[in-house]
Amino acid sequence: MQLMYTETQDGLVETSEFEMICWVKDSSDLEAVQDAANSVIEDHLDEAKNIILFGEARIFVGGSPVMSIGFRNKNADSDEIESVIDLLLSEEEQIH
Image 1 (cartoon, rainbow, N blue to C red):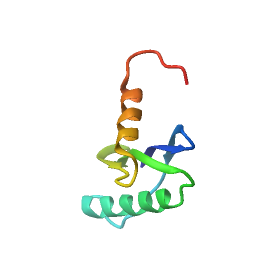
Image 2: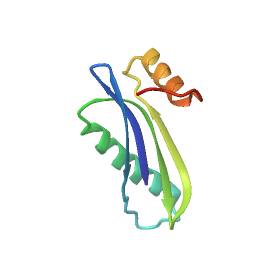
Image 3: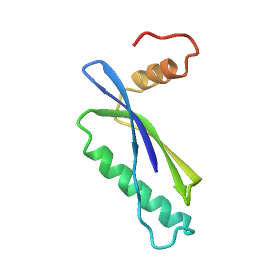
Image 4: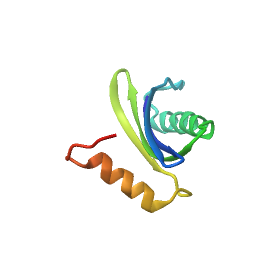
């Protein structure tokens, strides 16, 4: 699984990426794969020191992508989330 999320603290925004492994008994059982991925994502985000705004996890089985899980923090400021998304999607050159 590739996990990417955007977090903020004291007005600074940072994007982090991680590669993780989730174990399931039957990798063809996509419901079990999704449950395992959700559990690992929740644990990782619960341990985050900063406020998570949004992110995405891409799940692979046998090297092939099988699903993507997107998430947004419902407790975070939605205007701040939209502003960060606009910045990340902007095709203009940005100074960071």
